[in-house]
Image (cartoon, rainbow, N blue to C red; front, side, top):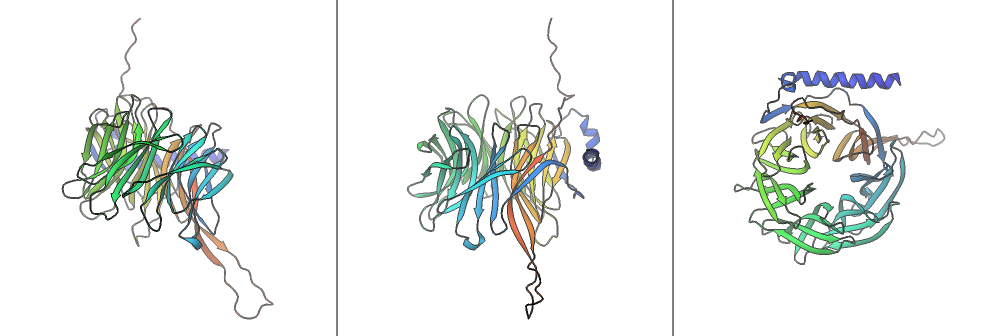
Length: 451
């Protein structure tokens, strides 16, 4: 126990030292003014951060990739993704696995789905869980797949969503305004690719059948990657739209319950940008995260903004860059306004850098409080962030692990012996990262109650 406390203390001291190294970090922490824009260079970590637990799921001969998860009432995690057999690269299976609160894998099941391209998301359903995936057949149009599973991982039913003349690709699924429906965010494109792609929202019933669809054909290529339900109804959609010069531009839309567009904003950044996740904040604001490309040479930067929820106007924004390509993956906001940002670090080609995942904590004014770094095996990827039933922040992704296979030596066998070999395998990865401490913002003035 004393050893764990020592590790926690070491991690805390390293975080404090890293923050002090950032220019002006100490002075900004007590400053209630908001710095509108800042470029933050993330220092290369020397050690990894402490986590409460982590779990690795998979077998050496196959690749497993977790993309999404839900936390069950028992506190366990139902992680969902795809299983790929390198010996049969044309086949992928839907993978579900339940992971206990201590990281122990309780069970795992796979289901063959013809033409499966990738698993997108899992969401609670009255029969257990609904899984959104994309199908890419050898011939014909790409389409969507919705599977209904019970909480033991058994497939109960499935439906496909197809366009009669176009390709469609799913990006997100959320609850509809009615408890009896879901909204699927997708992008569509002509089979010939001769026209700009567009966004489409499908309202589906609880069995996955399409009730209605809403296309956003606005003359410029666009895609919705994320739908976030608002407390007062409707959604905020995040994604990208092509601007007049043909570059990707970050795009936000406020949608009503009936999916009508209430407002939209585009955000041009450098050579290109896109927004991938959003989350409501205090005082009718939104935190959104994505990735921006530099205009000149340089690595991709994770991009965090807080915007006005009624107009989309920027309140502040931060660009997070460093020795790796950093992609913003997900964002989560606690009740007291602390912002958790998940970013994925990918090593530039031939750079020799070690890939890792970062979990940043910022206050409501964009001041960075901490940066936690997570390593495993040869490389890691992160796709989703969510709260657990406890205080942990759960990271969902995959990790590349090197296994040494010992063939052994046989003195009785003449000739050369088979040498030991190292095999790399992709495994599903879930991390229970430490939670955030309660935060009393000194810049928020509470109204005194009248007697």
